[in-house]
Image (cartoon, rainbow, N blue to C red):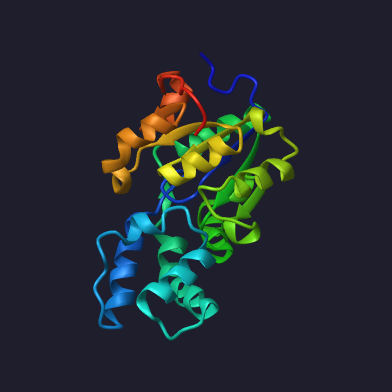
Length: 230
């Protein structure tokens, strides 16, 4: 079966879904808190899952009693991550080939990310995302971050695509929920940094892939239909 049948637009989460970048954030969090004499709590990454960059700064400021303002925190994190996003981040397996395939088929593409606009711009400059991507929406531009559907609905609006004809690619449960609550089909993407959540992701999503090559080959995993509302 062609996963792209009756698909007007494909919308990607960025980190861990389209590009392999989740590996750096735990290092950044450890370094950031370590400079302030604190250890990274074991539950931190799960607590901020899906939050916008701004929501993460608000949460961190409150949880850790940080002196910096929300805007100062965002600027610090951008500075700490910029070099890696500019030079060390690459596509997930067969990601570029899949983007080329979508472009050839005339399917519009968007990114709906919790990351900052500055870091999206950096990875765009490195990987040439703008050759393929028609619209980029960050969660800071909408009212609520994931798992709320806002960022996906806004991406669909900008792409002039009905939500039911959009296909989303996501690597974490909060993002999968955001896509489903937007009324879209969602394909979960395997990522080493959410490996322990694989079964939860399978329970929420419509499809599952390890590599984008599976979509090109037609070997992606179709998951059982879900009962009731998410």
